[in-house]
Image (cartoon, rainbow, N blue to C red):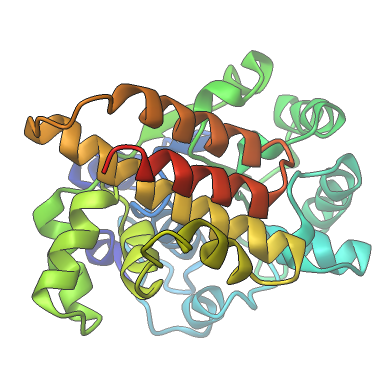
Length: 306
């Protein structure tokens, strides 16, 4: 892996490479921007550049030494990735059920990062979805960022920078990541073997997020007809956390379809009301609303515009 794999983020990558070249690395980076635009890839390349076994590595990792390979496989002992899998392993729970970052997780991370570096170089922590930090967890993280262990690098990833406490933001250097262009998303989907028309439709709906575009393209055809609201709800997985994720994607697709109609100037009366309803249902899902009921109501809202 190299910086060249992070597509469409030239400004952000130029900033990160500049830090590495000048060796003026901020103790804590916040990579902020929509999901699916390259933040995670950039964070891993940042980690590889710091952990690369080639002593003269500056802007870019060599990609071939054992350290670089271990980072690529997420097995490097000096790299800690705080994600759903990390927290689930601590709690002996299902990764899909990890909706917030808990204080116990941050305390364990501090212990992990306080240990001596295995390679004798850096230790790197990557905190995914940092905006899901619970209040106690954010306070515990703040204490770490105020006095980080020596030779540790911290990277926070977030699609909702505004949801992070100001005290945490004040300790971070923010590197902003932008939505990808529709053309770039189409190209990326084509490299995954998608047909041009499917790629075009998904790219138009995804708000510049490659991962969301891929999920939209792979979700299959949506139910139609008078029974569609009930068929869509019945098709959701039985597991609640999986059903919620699927419902969020379906409601997002319905919302984007209405937005495209509105932006294209289609003379469809009464788009604003159903669009507002869909946005409200999307917010409700994030606060533990029943996914089947939310999806049923979303289909009824979308049907009202046809």
